[in-house]
Length: 114
Image (cartoon, rainbow, N blue to C red; front, side, top):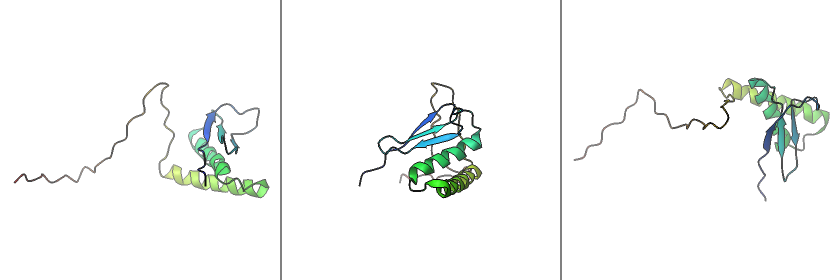
C-alpha cells in the first residue's frame, strides 16, 4: 500500500472561479487552492473543507458536498474554539521556535551528589 502524498497549498485570488477554495484530487500531485482575501476563521473553515475533499474523494455529488461542508464547519469550529489561528509572519522571517513549557508552580528537586 503506497503512502498518500501531502497536498500542496497555493494561495491566489479565486474571483474568476467564484470560489473561496478548490481541491484538485490528482493522486500524484494533490493541490488545495485558497483565496488570499479570506479572513482568519473563514480561511480555517475553507482549508478544512478542501482538505476533506482530498481525504474523502468518494464523497461526490450534491449530497457529498453537503456532508463535506458540514464536516468542514464542524472541524474548523473545534479547532477555532481550541485556539488554532493562522500566524502571519513577515516575508523571509524565521518562525518562533516552540519549546516544551514546564508549569511555573512545579520546581525540580535538586539532585543529591552523595
